[in-house]
Length: 172
Image (cartoon, rainbow, N blue to C red; front, side, top):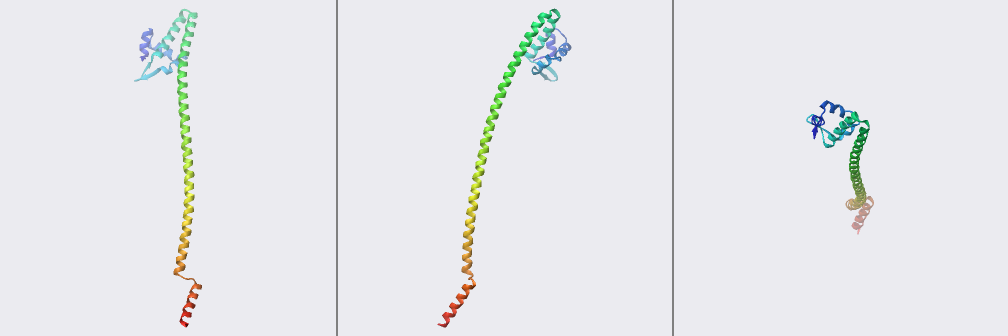
């Protein structure tokens, strides 16, 4: 990583000249991925340094021979294009990986959702069976209690029958 001042010294221009040049499009756009700021100082990686140096070579050539500058500019664009193509391929690969991961996560979510639905259905069935068993137990308890009450407390008709039985026994 080199600073703007280091690159300017290597090219043989001032720091301000480098700063002015890297702020102009298309170089400013091309340099974005290659610039970082460390402790408030702009630094450029090797690719950024190469782009800056090529940009100054293009300007130098223009002053001497416009035709040669055009050829150099074409190679500069070609190199930039190759670099951008490589970056695009890398990004495409990263996007494909993310899409695959997302698809796997969605499938996992679907499986989990299906499991939850299945468990909810089982719970509903168990709840239904539990209610049926509870109703049967209540019915049995009601019958049992009714029988106990009848044994303990005879109905009016049974009381009368019992009264006549007692009288009939006395008269004999």
